[in-house]
Image (cartoon, rainbow, N blue to C red; front, side):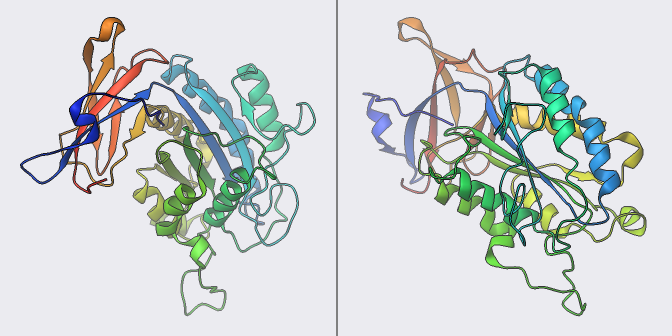
Amino acid sequence: MGVNVTDNNQDSLGSETPSGGVTKNYYFFVKRSADILFVIDTSNSMAEEQDLLKNGFPSFTSALNAYSSGTLDWHVAITSTDIATSGSGKQGALVAFQNMPANTYYLDTSISTDQANAAFQASVVLGIGGSADERGIAAARLTAEREFNPSTSRGFIRPDTSFSVIVLSDEDERSSQDPNSADYTAPEAIDLPANFVPAIHALDQVSSIPKTISFHSIVTSTQECLDGPGVSMGTMYMNLSNLTNGIIGDICALKQTYQEQLSSLAAKIVNEAKTYTLPCEKIVENSAEAYEQALGGALVKVPSTFIAPNKIVLQNAPPLGSLIKAKFTCLDGT
């Protein structure tokens, strides 16, 4: 999430450091926005879980607004894990929201929170007639392919905005990952956790720097859940969550209507909206610093934390629209 601004300082062009890295400056504007995709398992074991998500959703929007003090510009959309058939919410297509004007494919902050909650709750119960071959990772990828294609985009995914996926499923990607099982179907490249973020970045030709991407999993995540209502362990989903610093939740938390988990997810997403990917594949640990460009040209240091290999998180971020200078040492020579 950033905007290049010309910098006439010597080190903005890169200057070699004794460690062999290059010291760089990068300027961007503070922009707190998030595009959030819910991917819902529609297989025949998911009726109760869809209802629980429906009932718990107001805690999610409430937490988004509370943790951001009402400053997060969010989009929320829905698709399903079913890519075997076509139609609304399938093959990565977005669900049209009920209780909204026709062809509303995402909710946003232009409407009231109560209206957003009502529309989501009226739309998220997708039924249990979907494919038993659940493919939430592939579905999210297909949504991105649709959104980065001008001829099919619904306007849900925006340039320079963080992209967060939340999958709700009691089975893993492609369901059975035991090659000895009669139900085993080998994952394709589009299913593999390691391919997800690079594929989204390759699709995104409009953002100024690579998007901040996270994948969160409300899945069968414990042996206790697997021994109960969980159908199969969500190993591939959890692997992708670990790769993207996402949250791993528990689909078996049935009596809590997922409220605590949804609140935690909202807090994480708000924090991701304060996260900026810098234009370098690998930054020297602790070399990244952030400064606000104040009126008159003065630079005021902004408290920040570094996330390897190339992200910076602004703590107590300055107001929206503030110009930030990030200075860091890049090791990849870009």
